[in-house]
Image 1 (cartoon, rainbow, N blue to C red):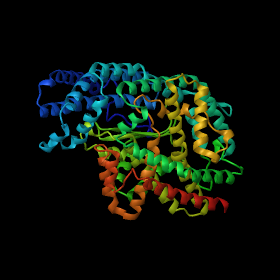
Image 2: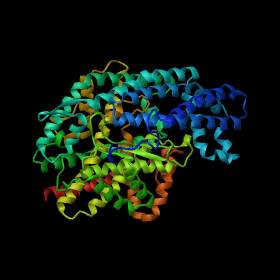
Image 3: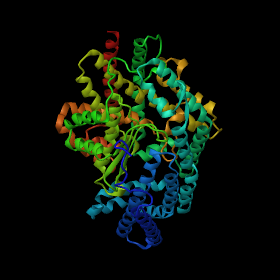
Image 4: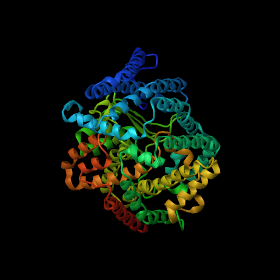
Length: 587
C-alpha cells in the first residue's frame, strides 16, 4: 500500500481486528436494547418516549454506521473484495433487525400531538425539532412494523443486490482499445484527451464495454425501478418523484422554478456546443466524443503534490478551516487517487461521523479537471465537517443541498483560475472547462431527469429491454441537447454507466446536481460581493442543511428558492460567459 490509497485504519485495521469484533457485539446489544424499548414504549410518558427513542436509535446508528462504512469503502476500493461484500450483507441483515422496532417507535412518537413542541420546555431536545417534525410528517407513509421489516429484508436481495451487481459489472467490464484491454472507467477518462483520434477510439471502447453488459444492467434497472414503484404505491406516494421531493425536504414549487429556468436557457448552452464544434472544425452540432475535448491551451499535467499545493493556495484565501481540512486530507491519506482494476469509477466523498473525518475516492489522471474534481469532493468533506457537530440522528442532509458545498468549491477554483489566466488560450481552456461542466449540469442532467421520468412512467406497463432504454436515452438527449449535438453521435448507453439510476432508496438523483450548481453559483456571487463577511453565513447555512428544509436553509443566505428569478440569475451569468467564449473561439 502506498500514500495514494486511502487509510481506513482510523476505523478498523481489518475485519479480524478486535475493535471490529467489539463493535459487532455492541451492535447486537444495541439492537436488543432497541427492540426491548420498542416493546415497552406504549406505557411511557411523552418525554420518556422521545428521549428513549433518541438514545437507542443513536446507539444503533453510530455502530451500524461505523461498521458498514468500513465494509462499503473496502468494496468501493476493490469490488472483488468478497470478504467486504459478504460483511455488507451481514450488516444489512443486522440493520433490518431494527426495522420493526424503528417503525413502532416512530409511530409512537408520531402519535403525539406535537412531538417537536416538547423542545419548548426541554432545551436538550432543541436540536431534534426538525427530526421530530419530520417523524410526524413521515408517519403518513409509514407501514406496519411487520411490513417495514419485510421490506427491509427483501431489499437486501432486491434493489441492493441489483445495485451491487451493477457496480461490479461497470467496474470490471473491459473492451479492446488499441490492441489492449482497458476498463470502462479508463475508457471514459480518455474522453478528456487532447487527441481526437484517442477520444474516438476511447468512445468506441466505452460503447463496447457498455454493450457487453447492457442486458444485465437492463434487468437490474427494471427490477430496481419496479421495486420503487411498488413501494411508492404501498406507502401512498403518488409517484417516485413525490417520494424523492419528500425525502429531500424540498417543495415541488422549487423544482418547477428550477426546471423552468433551465428549459428557458437551453438554447444558450446549445449555442456554446455549436461554437465548440465550429472551433474543432465541424459544422452543425458537437460530436458526442468531443463533449469533453479540451480546447485552448491548458494541457499541463499536475502531480498529486502539485494538486495539493494548488488547492491549499486557493482555499487558504477563502477560509482557514477549509484550508486545514484539505491539508489533513492529503497528509493523513483520506483520499484514494488513481484508477485501477476493480476500483469503482467516478469520484465520491463519504463522511464518517464516528471518527469526524471523510474519505474521498477519485480517479486522478493529472489534468486541471482532476483538481476541480478534488475540490468538489473536498467540498463534500467540508459539508460533512459542518454537520458533524450535530447529534448522530441529525447529521443527514438531503439530495439537493448535498451538491452545494462541492459545487461552490468547483466554482471558486475555476473562477480564480480564469481570472489568473496569463494568455487568451489559457483563459479559453479554463472557460471551456467551466462551460463543459455547466452543460453537464444543465443539458445532461436534464436529459437524465427526462430519462428517469420516462422509465418510471413506462415500467409498470412493461419490461423495458435494453433497446427500449436506449431509445428513451437518445430521445432525452435530443430534447436536452437540441441542435447543440450532432444527432448521429448520441450515446444511447448513458443509462448503463451512471450508478445514480441504480438505487432503490434514492430516485431522481439528477436534478440535485443542477440545483447544487446553480445554487452554488448564486452563493458565489454573494461571496464576490460580500467577501469575508459571507463565509460565516455560508458555514451557518451548511450547518443548518441537516436540520431544516432546503427552502429554510436558503433563507439563511437571503435566498427564495421558489422564485424563478433566482435560478435565472445564475443561468444569466453562464450566458454571459458563453458570449465571451464564442468571442474567444472566433478570435
